[in-house]
View 1 (cartoon, rainbow, N blue to C red):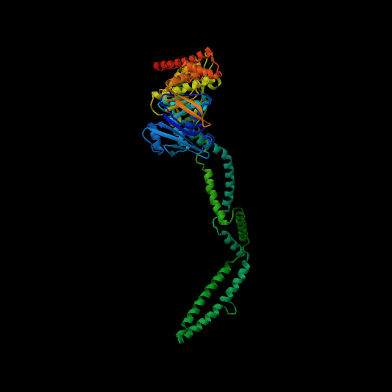
View 2: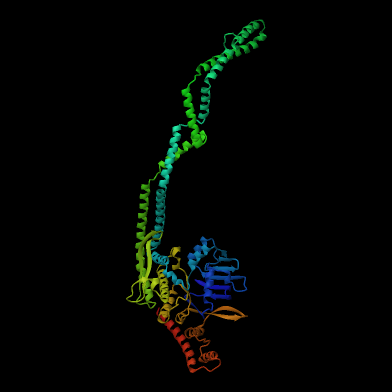
Length: 607
């Protein structure tokens, strides 16, 4: 519940402190007196939109402080946000506004927009002028229906809606996976064809040895010069091992070896030289045998040379397309792996189609259950709303929650339409198309009454999504716009009944509504030191009579006596004596105000 509101340098307000009470609190005053500024300040304290234009002229800083009583839910929220409680009973929301910035605080701790919005939903619901537009919005109608239905279904509706949201996400993933597979299938097949062609070409080349090209080029060079190599081989053989004139290296070393052998018999010092010559002779003889074998193996083979030339050309062609030979071999392995992955696609399109269909059917089944819960909620809401509207002097009203099938979404497969007929014999039509402004106001008040009554029947908290059904303070800014007479009285009665379950703060121009208030505040403007200031005061009984008389008659009556009334009327007539009719009118206005208060007291006693 809102306990107090302190405002400093906000719009036309210099300094103002308003203490509020449980029950029905009414604000009245002339049009433009500043009633809505007070509500704007409360909205600002709870994170509402502000700008530097809201600063009082000449001021650098505005401060607003709203103090609320707390409950267990608020205490748990503070603990979750790691905000210390000031005490066990109160909570302070404040807003500091400057030309460059503004800060919102809870118990002195700066909070962000999301935090203050969460707290606001737990504290206050502000119904401002023009908010009846919400009644025509299908999304808001669905939220109201689901909020009401969640309570009567023991919170099963909200749980089912969460299930629908999860299944919708699953369905969307499987649908997108299928669509992506279908869209990419043509590209996949084209890519597959290209990979298969490249791999076929590479595998046909039978690449394996990164040094094969170098070896082939060596073989080609050897075969191309085989005759020349044989000629040189024979020459080397003759030089080192054997020739016709006997001066081969092996012959000469043999002779040297024989001589050294004889020398060693005479002098052992020559043994080392003999060993070296013997070793050299062995190596020359081995070289001779190897060069002889090499020369005999050399053949001029044009066919083999052609084969090698073709292989070299094939490898070079591959290298021109795929890089060096080692790179071409590595690319072949990569192609084999990629082709295996493309060929082995895991889940087939058919499997994806079956999964997408199964996920869709699971979603539709959950949506059907959600629709059933909404139908149950619709019946209960229709009954409660019609009863509430009848109390607002709409005895012939018809109301129906239309639930029509639509494409499934995360919120179900229902299109919700509030259908309304205020007059007997007229067909049901969408609320926005048939209700007048006054009927819209009464419909919104009746709807809020249904929620509060539902709350009083069940003390459990709703999920945060539906927080508007369990706030402690409800604010109405001219909810009675466009109505008068018997309808105004019905609204007054409904507001008073509503205030038995929640604190109500209401701005009104209706004397019938003002009369039934538990507390009546008057808002006016005054000129102080050549500056306009908004002031508010709580009216005592006599002051209430005067204010009600003024609202009802339009006359400014500051005292209840007929003499003072005549003085006021005389002022209005530029000093001329007022006629008896004017004097009687003033007296009648006071009498009417008294009758309103008596009538209000009677209504309260009956309830």
